[in-house]
Image (tube, rainbow, N blue to C red):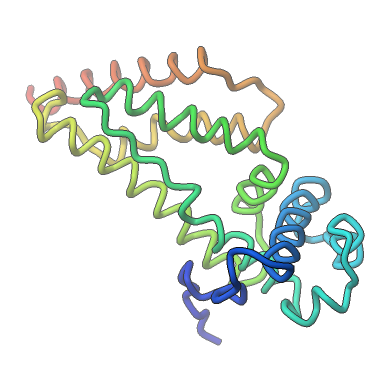
Length: 208
C-alpha cells in the first residue's frame, strides 16, 4: 500500500481556536505525548499514560486521535514551524552556530526531545513519512544558510553544499539523540570551525 505524504497543515487540531478549553486540552495532550515519547519511546507509549500525564480521560484523546500514530503525527505537525531556524547574520560561522544552538535548545525540552528522538526510530508508515519530511526540511534550511554564504563570496563556489551540511549536523544530532555525550555551545562552535576548515580543504582539492 502506498504511503500518503502528510503535510504539516494536515492535522486533526487544525481549526481549533487559539483560546478556550479545547485549545488547552490539545496543548496538554500534545505536551504529554512528547514527554511520553521522551520517556518510553514510540513503541511502548500508551494512551492511558498520556491521558494521566495530561490530566484528561482516554475518551477525550480517542475522540480526537483514534490511533497513536495520528496523535504523534499531530504532535510533529504542530511543531514544524517551531523546528525551523534559519539565521541570517551575514556570517556563515555565526549562522551555523545559531542553528546548532537552536537544536540544543529544542533538545532540552522534554516534549521536543521526544519529538526529535522519535524521528530516529521506526514507527508507523505515516509517522515515518512525516519524520522524513521534517528531516528534509531541516536539511534544506541548512543548505540555504550555506548557499547564501557562497552567493556573498564568503565560501568558495567549489564546495559541496550537501557535504558541508552533513559535516555540521551529523555529529551534533548524533550526540543529542543517540549518545550520552555532552553538547554545549563550546562543542557547537568546535563543530562549526571544523566544518568550515573541512569546507576550505574540499574547495582547495576541487580547484586543484
